[in-house]
Amino acid sequence: MSSDQQPFARRPPAPPLRAFVDGYVGYRVDGVPGAVHRGLPSRHLTMIVAVGEPIAVVAHTDPAQPPDAYHFALGGLQVTPALIDAGRRQEGVTVQLTPLGARTLLGLRPRELWNTTVEAEEVLGGAARELHERVQEAPTWAERFAACDEVLGRVLGGAPPLPAPLRHAWELLVASHGTVGVAALADEVGWSRRHLTQRFRDEFGLSPKAAGRVIRFDRARRLLASPQRPSLAEVAAVCGYADQPHLTREFARLAGCPPAAWLSAEHPFVQDGAAEAVPR
Image 1 (cartoon, rainbow, N blue to C red):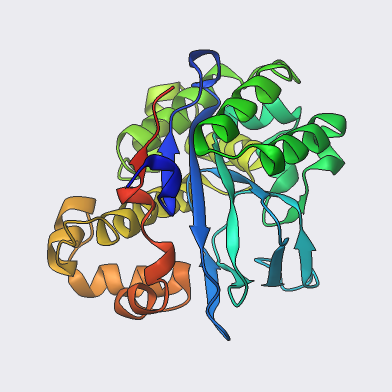
Image 2 (cartoon, rainbow, N blue to C red):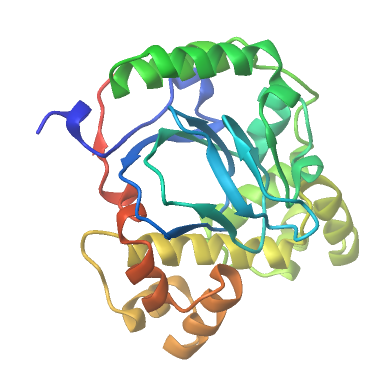
């Protein structure tokens, strides 16, 4: 099967974007009547360019935000799932934006998008309209990803860079898969725990401890969805949970359901780890 017949495809961005975007994922999934897809917490802000039907969010991470539909959704960091109507065919490209990329590509601190979803046009204006149109018109995954490279490459440099101590703290959390403690982070960046927590929350919208939980959860759910399908006990051990029940409890808090229920309900949507790589 060629890459452009695959329901999922992935590719890293062009080199100038790699500090700001971790990757692109293309997806094409037939609708399942009555099904709901969970948009889970992760270490990325997400930009999702819908192809054809818009993305219908039936419950946002913030309960005060009413249901809405998005042609080009921009979602911030979060600690609860969003619920998406999966009853219709789903197709599009997800841009996995790093918190550093929020400043550089969007001109915003991640905190300004914390726990919310907006139309990307509200932030990126004409660049968002152009990228949405080009992704609609491009017939292949490779051409869609190339459009992302070109348009996003033109909007680099939207705001002052992330302060070095905060960038270092975030990178340490990511490198440790969320297992480094707040005290160790504070020592590493030369701040008190209180000052680090305040500055971190002001920048990212959540505390270092909460960010570690999300990053660890993000790794765990990707391992569970991988083709190797390791056991819950194996994932718990690899990801630094005390034991399998600890993983199950934490997964339920962040995903809104236990791991087994998530895998069963989300089977068509959890294949990004197995997506075919598309060459540049």
